[in-house]
Structures are given as C-alpha cells and as structure tokens.
Image (cartoon, rainbow, N blue to C red; front, side, top):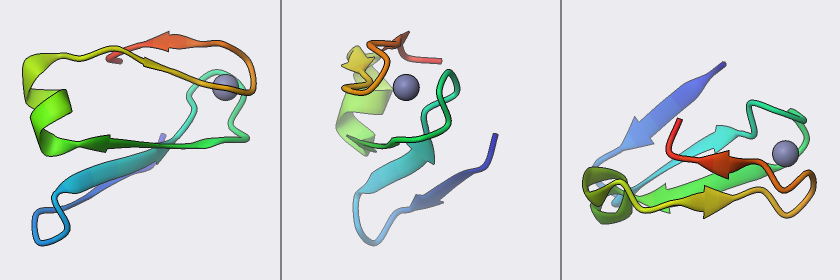
Length: 48
Ligand SMILES: [Zn+2]
C-alpha cells in the first residue's frame, strides 16, 4: 500500500486498501483524531 503525505497541503491520500480503485484523502486533522473514512466504491471503512 503506497501512502504519501504532504504536510504543505495538509492532507494524506492513499489508495483504498480493499478495492485498490479509489483514492481516499484525509486531512491530517482527521487522521490525527482517527476519524473514520469510507470508500465509496466498496464501502470499506476504517482508519487503517
Ligand atoms: Zn474500496
């Protein structure tokens, strides 16, 4: 799983670890607080 971060832009983006088709973006604040995300393609959820 490739994950990259950019502090200058204030968010991280990564490909959905389940379906590998959708790019998910989270703000660093959301990541820090462990806010959940959901993949709109396969409905995978998690902070992982
Ligand atoms: Zn997915």
